[in-house]
Image (cartoon, rainbow, N blue to C red; front, side, top):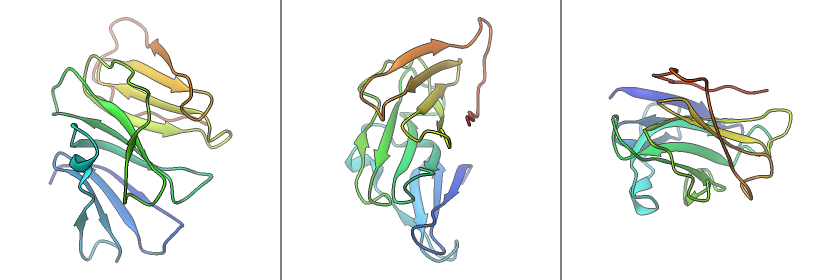
Length: 149
């Protein structure tokens, strides 16, 4: 299934989330069975590249989504109910390539970052109210992960 990311939430013991090329999935029983989160109901992008749990609120999830592995678009989505519903979170920033990763600051969960495959970094210091586009140095390509404190 080409798993891209796995996350667990302290909100419900045994609950596991998976992002892959087919979308977003969850398992209530530590991976014994899986259910599609039907991200396509909320987003035109269903290619799940990353999924993260908010360190301050274990019911809140963030996902990096795109139309395909090699694309010219993408978005960051947020769920505040363990993946039952989703909303676009990035206020329509304009990634020029596939969104690859999302990271939430452990020191300040209002700070959220996203990155696309060519190193275009998006960030919000205020829980999604405002966004900044900060590209990595010229020539950076094939970005697959993002981390922050």
